[in-house]
Amino acid sequence: MADSESDLETDGLEVALDSLCNRHCSDGSSLRSKSYCSEFCELVEEYTGQWQVPLPQLKVLWTALSSFTKATAAFPDDCQHVHYVLSSLALSFFELMLFFSKEEFVEKPLKDILDSFQACHSQLLRHRNVYLQHVKQIIKAGGPWENPVLQGILKEADLPPKEVEDYLSSELPVFFELRVRYLQACERIQEAKALAKSCLENREAGKHLYFHQAYLTCLYKASLHEHLHKEMAEIDGRDAVEIICNTESVEKDELLLSLCKSFLTQQLHNGDMYYIWDLVFIWSRLHLRAHPSREGFLAECLQLASSATNVRAIFPFIKLVTTELGVEGVHVCLELCARSLQLCDMQADSVTRSLVCKTIAFLLPHDLEICRACALLVFCQERSLEAYRTVCLLYMHPDQEPHPHNSPVRTSVRFHILQMLKERLCFDPEFWNLLTLRTHCLELMSDKVMKDAVLNEMKEEEEKEYSEEQLINNCVNDSCTQGFNSCQCTGAFVNKDLPEEQTMDGETDKPVAPSSNALLKRRTWRRGLRRRKQSKSSRRRGIW
Image (cartoon, rainbow, N blue to C red; front, top):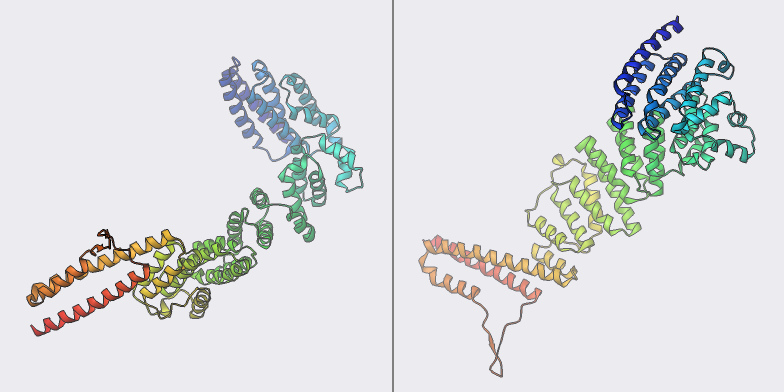
């Protein structure tokens, strides 16, 4: 019944292929060959997809190859579209041949199909397609499983290395890949492992990443964990990502998660950052798909990130936790930051220490005391103008009392982080005002250009304060005319340029620019003067 149904299907395919040939194969132009080959592949895929058993599918391929051989007679020998279709047909033939034994190769209808394939190959020799040539040789040898060296490999027999090397070099790696895939699909894990291992040891086949993927999968299924970890140690982050992504379509989540976690753990222990962001992301997708619990996910993140020997490995975990859980994961991120500060001390890594401080400030943006400590520690590491400006900006904000109920972390965690930050500062600014803090920061800045820039900023701020002072005085003068002359004199004194000094030779010397300490002292005096004037004005308003 099945044979008669498949005959009807192939009859319909022949009619469709003949119609396709009449439309596109009247000449050998490149455009016609492209259209014909594209529609040909769609037809073959449609008809083979109607069957789930190999023999009817082989009949479809047989009919398709015969029609294609006749239709492409007018196409040039080097037509790339024809070459692609022939390669696809050859590999499809070989993949279906894997289901049959040597005894079935000499029985009908398989014998007729294979004889027809060889006849078509003779007519297609001008295209010099290597895949067709390999399939013909395999058919002539009795099938894809009949080579004695291959049988010895599958049985894990002790074979001469040269014989194994010669055999594995006699075929293209893709044919061994199809064999391994077939063995895995049939759950013949031991044979698949043996063949994959032999291919890995081959000079040419070993370059193909698939055999690493297959060998690791077989080791996992065979519970050979020691060999599995040894094999994984030779694979870098990029290949690990590719292996996991390629395995996803054919294996279960449990196997994928186990492989991914092993790869990630290995990278973290080695301090290797190559493709670490990709591995962390893939692991998170697989873990959340298999275990949706948020608490379990946070615990796994903390455990993995805590095993890292490279401080920078915490950043992908922090990004992951904040993206997935938001405020709920801040306490875990802060624990990772605390550990990272300790690692930075051991590795003397000031650059990463600054990054960790900025990360802490990012995690607790509304905690002014934490942000100030982070900014100060960054300044102590970098001593840059930008870091100095950040410190000044934060210390200009009014002090805030911490509210435990408004904090996303426990008070103990916050206190621990704050103590770790303060312990690493160059000074203790606990009871300093902004002027004192600026003075000490200025002493730490060694670059003259940066110092000059800071002094210019301080001068500009002083002028701004003076302008505001003048505005206040003018407002006071409008209501209190008695103090007009006093205010005018003071303003003129403050704003007046320094006179040029007369020298012994009668020449004039310009005044020397004040030093940083002089500027700071003058600024202190000016503030005191302004406070006294404001107090005086207030008393006058009280009199009126």
